[in-house]
Each structure stands twice: as C-alpha cells, then as structure tokens.
Length: 475
Image: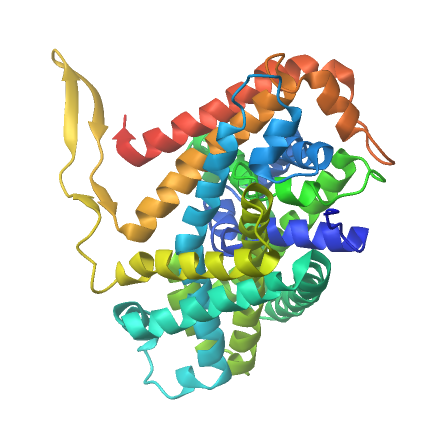
C-alpha cells in the first residue's frame, strides 16, 4: 500500500510544530526566562536551539524521510546488516504510550478550564476561592476521567481520518487558531498598566539576576529548555519525516518548525508577565501558574471571562495538537509493524490509552499514596568530607511517568538517533548529510562531521547527567 504524504508543505510544518508546541512552552519557558535573567536566558536559549535543537531534529526527520517508515521499520530499512539499532524503535513506541498516559490528563485539565471559563464558573465562586477549583478538580476522579477520556477519543477520531483528511486538516485549523489567539492575548496583555515592568523583567538582559542564580544554572537551564521544547527522542517527529517529499532540505524545515515553537514560547511570556505585574501576582512554576495564578488575574481583569476562555482555548489547542501528533505515530507504528488497518489500529490503541491513562488521574485522589516518597534527605560522606546530599523524593504517578519520559527516554532516545545518523556503525554521516540536503533550502556542510560525531553527543550526555543529578542530588 502506498504511503500517505502531506497535502501541503504548510500542513507538514504546522503538524510538526504542533507536535513540538505544548504545555511546557507556556508555563515553563516564561517562568525560567524571568527567573534566569530575562534576555540573558533568551539569548542562550536561542543559541542552544541553533547548535543543538535544530541539528537533532534533522536526524529524526532524516531517518523518517529516507526510510518512509515509522520508528522500528525506519531503523531496519537503514541500519547495517545484522545490527540492532531497530530495538530503539520499540523504546520510542513505549515512550509515546507513556507520554500519552499523563499528557492526556493534563490536556483534559486545559479543556476542563476552557469549559469552566466559557460557562462562567469562576464568576459564580466567592473571591479568593479560585485555587479551590483546581484542588476540587484533582480530588474528583469522575471529573478528571470525563475530560481525559474526551481528549483521548477526540484525538483518535481526528487520526481515524488518516494523515491528510484527519491529522493535517484538523491540526492546520487548530494551529492557525492557536497562533491567532496567542497574538490577540499578547496584544491585550500589552495594553495593561504593568506591561512595561513585565516586559523589562521578561526580556531585558539582567546580568545581576543571572549572576545571582549562577551563570552555570542559566546556561544549563537554557540548554535543557532548548532541547526538550522540540519533543525529540521518541520518534514523534520521525513519523512526519516519513510522510515528507524531497522538495526541501530538512535543515530548512527544522528551522521553520523551531521558529514556530519559539514564537509561541516567547509570546506566552508577553501574555503572562504584563498581567502578573499589573495585578501584583508573583508568577510561579508548573500547574499553579496556569490553574491558580492566571485564573486570579482573569478574575480581576475587565472582560476576564472572555480572556480566560480564549486563553484556555489556546492552551487546549496547544495540548491537543501534541496529542493528535503522537497518536498518529502510535497508529502508524501498529499499521507498519502489525499490518493492521487504520480502523483496527485506531480502535485498539484508543482502548489501550483509555485504560493506561487511568492511573495518572487517580494518582491525585484514590491512588494518592501510590508513588515514590521520601521526606528525608541523606548526606553522603567520604571520611569527614561531605560529598553530596541525596534529595527527598516526592513523586506521584504523573511525576514518575514524566520523569521516565523527560529525563530518560527523550534525551537517551535523541542520543541514539544522533549516533545512528553520524557514526560509522549506524547509517553513517555521509548518508545522513545526503538525505538532509535533498531539495531547496539551507544545506549542512560536511565539515560539521566532527561536531556531530563528538561535540553534540557530549552536550546531550551533559543534559542526561544534569537531569538525574538535579532530581536526586544536591552538592
């Protein structure tokens, strides 16, 4: 059966960017940019996108386009005889399932809050009770199940239409709406009284703040954000490479995908910081920023119900675009490796993800005691010299799932894709460069061989080690 391809180049770019653009763009990027010195962090972030994010993205796209297959068969088509690179393809599939076990729950939270703002829930509660809406939602397994299952069924319904008539058609509309919404929201924030102070805090280089946080932490934070923002390492991007034409170079397409992802991240800060400074609310990291801090802002803002509805519609689109992209990968892998029809693959995988998503939302109520918890830190000595401290651990089910994906499968997977493409034991640098440079657009130079083979792998290993150390150890 002939493999589907994208109907248009715009469709490929928007679907691929939709996979990369997610929740982290909105709640993580603005927070760490502000904390790590504003423009100082942004500058390092852009540098690492160019020297790490884009090169690694091209490796996934190259494996996909050259093989015209999903992860496992993509490796098999390109790997040397009797080698075992394709085993990593199975880890990619596992990673996609594991990602969707918790990402669908968080996407359900976004959809839930969109409905709450649309129906005026926040107008009916007493002042100061905004936080309770989030905690009540988490404590209700039924409420979370309804929205998580809705997200999963919607995502698979989109994918059941195939690449062109399902994923591409729907994601193009979602992404165009997303980009329009973020501009409207940013313009509204820039009209607020605290816009000037918010922008200064967010974008002007503050070397004092950066020095206070430690320049090493600023650089490593920028490196991590630039790497993880593109959703690399579990073949979520590789699958879209398999649907591409040879008309344009992969470097040029990777730059366009990255530019859209970065645009959304930067614009998110333009929404959040002016609003926080206007209403004297300290921006905080993680779910509390989205589900506790921002609703308080919308509550006090003129036409806040409208702006809250638009914001969570934007967040729902950002989350759903990732969900449908990863679902497409899961469906295609079942079709390629098991020979299933799109109907069978969609139905079976939908049932599997519905069941697999249950532990995550139960982890906040019925199964709240399930996880890895240790309230005690432990100092490790060599003789009388303190080496490091083992940190307390507080990992619920969602945190465990996210840790496995973000700290292990994504960076290790990216390293495997890179080594496969550039080492003599894999596909090989010459084959990789030839594939990347097919078509019109930006070309990679063969002189980058040393950088790709030796420097880039070291940078990824640094990210892996840093992530583990930050989680478990304090020096």
